[in-house]
Length: 292
Ligand code: ADP
Image (cartoon, rainbow, N blue to C red; front, side):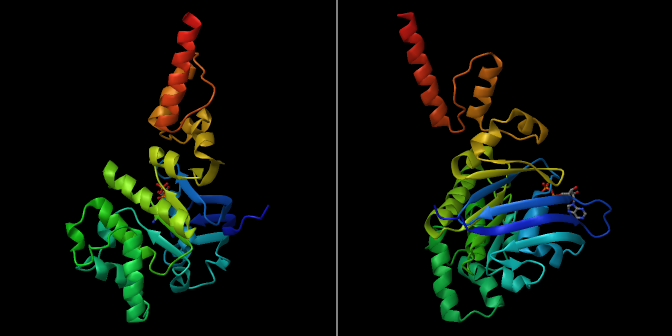
């Protein structure tokens, strides 16, 4: 079997903000592999945003503060390479789409970052069209960004972030301001980047339903350290982790946890609604047969 390629590596990373006394990231050791879709979960203040900024190099380069240990992305140590170099490898999408919109048309918006680093104009246009195609916003080039829905605005932000064709896309709670439709649009877009372009996705999020459907792996942060690291099913079925990190689990998982608590154990632990329905149907048929 081929060794999986490590694309992000954290070695004993500690970080404290300027003028703060306490480290908010405490001894993180982590490997993320090429093409993985990783969700970062944890309660508010757990360190999710700080971790996203450490991965993109914004910490410590723009934020300052005190960092110990090393973060390596695509073989580049984030402390040794300028942000302009790092953004070619790792794109970042922030929580609030409004704060990421600067221009008067979708096309200009997507091209904006690339113009700032003096990309060839023909290449900018070609790449912007590709990026808008990836986020399924072709035809929207001339629209004013403020006229878009929340989900569309975040997809414009994703298109801007992938203009450099980065290998890694980091998203910091990208759907927290969106309605359920916008949330699914964003997760489907990001999943497509993984499936079609083998992009590595790291997203901080509380959206357990979307994680259950789209993510390969969940890393749970608690007080700046890793509390759990596993598949969505492993993490959501771990009652201690769920309670300690105040995680919301998918509704269907919550139902099965409640059933277990009443002594009804149906074997497997579903995280997707359709799997839960199938298990309940089977259990119902079995129940009918035993009563015949
Ligand atoms: P999360 O994204 O999980 O809510 P954050 O990474 O935003 O967590 O915050 C982790 C900790 O760092 C919190 O205790 C928060 O108060 C602190 N923190 C975040 N930003 C700053 C800052 N700019 N200066 C000082 N402390 C900060």
